[in-house]
Image 1 (spheres, rainbow, N blue to C red):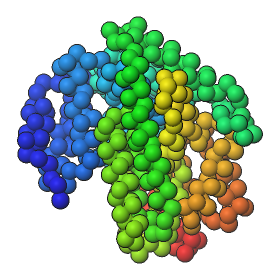
Image 2 (cartoon, helix red, strand yellow):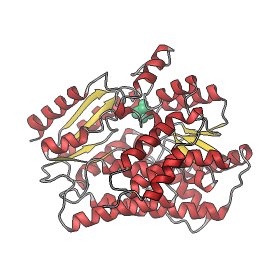
Image 3 (cartoon, rainbow, N blue to C red):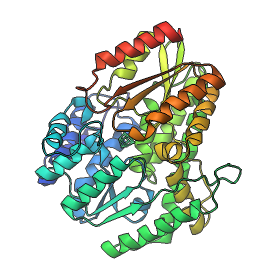
Image 4 (tube, rainbow, N blue to C red):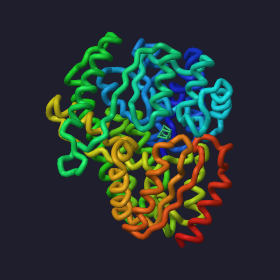
Length: 441
Ligand code: SF4
């Protein structure tokens, strides 16, 4: 087992004792917690990447390197190419949810009248509270998308209005870009490419940075190398037994959305591919004596980090991949700068939640039917987060289509994925237990 090298630990520890500034207090607390947790456990490529992601923010501050805040549905390769330091907002709002440390900020948002749990999402609301209280990291630039929901898009606009930080909003088109698709529109990719180029101009106009073609191409090459490993990883998970545990897919997502386009992402995705390949070759399952294979085509219940492990231990069941964790962007040709922009645009359109939820419901139904067949799924479990109002109907219609086409049952239950006080872990476990024992087995 490779534990953290003492020199590396001391380097991080020294950094954690420096003054990061008031607005980075919560970021520093999370880093310090992670570092202490890491002290005696194996230092995997993934854990090292997470530590680097945290450490890069104070380092960027010291070096005068601009920081850009972005949401969980956009990868940072363009930002790395422009020599910016990316900070994914949900690392904070969602990152503190398993420890229930988000609750005071949710309560504060309620108190000031900034929505409630069903209307505005708690994957962003805590950050708005932090911003008003002066405790949110203050980036130099703000980037967000028009998708996956109005709630997200609006909270980023509110953050911009509070902080007056220059912002760029990328509009995501509705239609498909592959010619054989019934919903094909030839302008889809070009529309995103144009906006990506506008984004480059916007970054140049708001910083002293300039676009460097060679650096962009190198970044996109690294990004596509990692996508190649993820593609192999995804295919390996079709094996029975599934070679990894239920939470592994989520780590792939976290890797690509925080470090896509960096060497870190290449290392992590390769190590996950290698582990899955080794386990397939040796018949090792992520869950011993695997009996049930579950599709989880939506987000995790983030306030309970132990839920999937409980499912594994209680029912010998494996959650193959959740919606975010099933990263489906294919590797592309990056031989020219135009191809790199095209790869960037396709990656934006196919990103985990964006790709499956940005267009007609047929995108999602087709995705689910294929997933169930490819991954030999026995049942579907879908937590329906209160604020995801735009997918309430989609979940029900899809479960009926799945039943008709494949015969397998679905469980859909409501909860607030970030707030344990709405529907508790015990209630959720009760529903899952009844479903698995009375309907699936
Ligand atoms: S969890 Fe739902 S409501 Fe929240 S940001 Fe994601 S899509 Fe939007």
